[in-house]
Length: 592
Image (cartoon, rainbow, N blue to C red; front, side):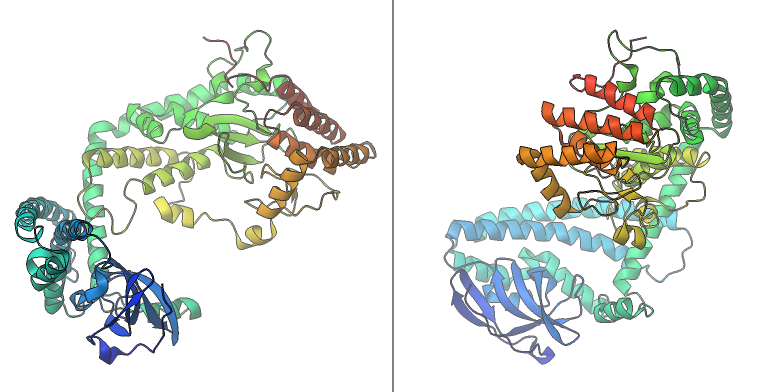
């Protein structure tokens, strides 16, 4: 695009005629000041600097400094005054006409949204007497508006094909612009709406930016914002009312109490045998939290089990031993590799599947005895195991709240009534949450994105990492004292991209450098300093990708490091895993 000059935005030039010039990519519009009426910059004056179809670039003065923003033509006041806004004159007539027709169809879709939203504009400041009933009235209106708009749209499309499509592109544009109420009804309706609600989208954008920067109170919400809030509150009230009716029919309270009591009793009965089996074969002490997970799973009725399935969560790994603690593995296979994926560090003990791309969750044992927390990762995708934290049920709650977010956890969406299957899924997730909170996280009332916002890592952890963990390529960090020959930072919730990329390239692409690293780690471990062997062994285990040489080095270093640290059970797990890393599947128990 050709060079563009800049002149200050002037509010008194909102309707100045534009100067159309030819750029190397088509027409551009220079020196036209307009007013933005929709979006995050609503209320700002802007200067258009370039146009490409319905998209344009404009300069907005924020704190006195010109800032380029991308806009859509419908976000501007009087878009019909921008003749070059449509498309390049070099386009074929057929392309122009097809674009006009597509734009007109989209305008009718937008028209329905605006007509429905007026329902809440009219009620934004009324007393909130019965919000659930208000949502019922809104859903009835939506059905009427949708039917009405569909009819109008069909009529308009037929008329366009008969009256506009046969015309040359230039004449077609002029006809459409001259009768915007017919061909571009959403834009015309928006102007009419503004005449009835003069302050509908008066923006406090700059005041909000200042308030955020300087910690000042936000300005009062606009009418548009209050209407959005009213719609969200109305939907929520109806959702809770409908859920109460649904819950009474699908999970009576006495039924839940019976299931919970039976579940707790069963866990108490089976606990000792399960603990003995894990201690005997793995050398691990199971935390109380894994037995709470077991009781939670046993207390679920068919509806909550469906909700867990909706989240693609299912017990696996060590959980398969609860029903039969003496269950053995198939002949010739070490039971300790049951549920152990190819890249699982020895510290990782799988207890739950997560559905797609090999997502699975595991208890984490730094010292080979005591559970530190929960880790998880996608075996078939990128990303590491992350810092161990939380409990198994907290991991379930974490996943549940992501699932909640994906079925309508937004203040202003969906605008229309939800699909019945989405409603049913929300009810199931809500019930699952209620059951889970009787076991853990009962003090966490947040839902969806609010839950995750309140559960973020601390700024100190994000900046400095875990002071006790040395960074490793698998993202879990190694709990070991001492410095390493490879310069490593402290493990953060995510890995240092530059460090990981450079180290992985060296270890996989430079055999001589890798051999030197392994030799030095071996030497230091034999001298009583196992930090290099542990961290480098974990790195090689993580990136081995079927390479026998990398697998061999990983096995050697991990075994000697764990033994030097007194973590003999982890050394034994590393050996078992090394023998079976070529298994085609991770389920190795005998069928029952």
